[in-house]
Image 1 (cartoon, helix red, strand yellow):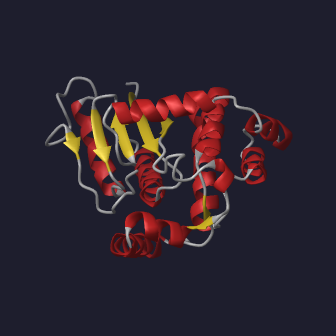
Image 2 (cartoon, helix red, strand yellow; image 1 turned 180 degrees about the horizontal axis):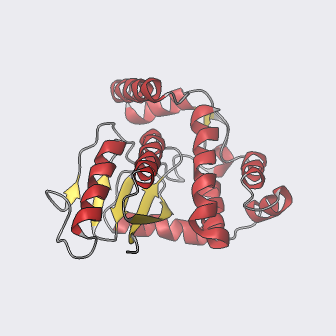
Length: 247
């Protein structure tokens, strides 16, 4: 019997700490399901979102604002302290070296590159690049608006050569498309990320644990992706264990 195909649309932003957590947890859940040989196949597409609007931080501001200073002012010190504590607790438990060093930058260029990766090679190109950008920004403190940083990541992940990536990033290719996708997400009611939309029917909001996704995928595997009215208790799982930034 062929596997059921589960289509996952992940709405995410590279400036979002909870999105980094959510990416780890979602991919861990998918790996677990594959190791357990659940009769599921996954199609993943990432959709851009910008928590920090261009009025608050532009490409020209790249490298000007340190993460802790920017987030403290944007979220308020109390909310930022709680977020930082939750993120660092998760990072310690998972062995992921999340860091608050480095600068905050607008994510437009990174999103453009990831959409180009999807055009060139679908999820096999896009997902590894997205993971690499999160790692560069959230673990290594690199500037993800820096064309040299992004072109290195593109070349290392075999999306395109460094020179091809530099030429793409210096153009305006896919810029309008990225902004349109972000606008459409907001029009459709997305105000905070991450959000994982399953088969275009159900939305899982917030930086959920891999256990949450595993339980969902098990229900989809055993009750049927299209025949069941919903694998959830309700139409939307809306708990958010870690606060996301809201633009």
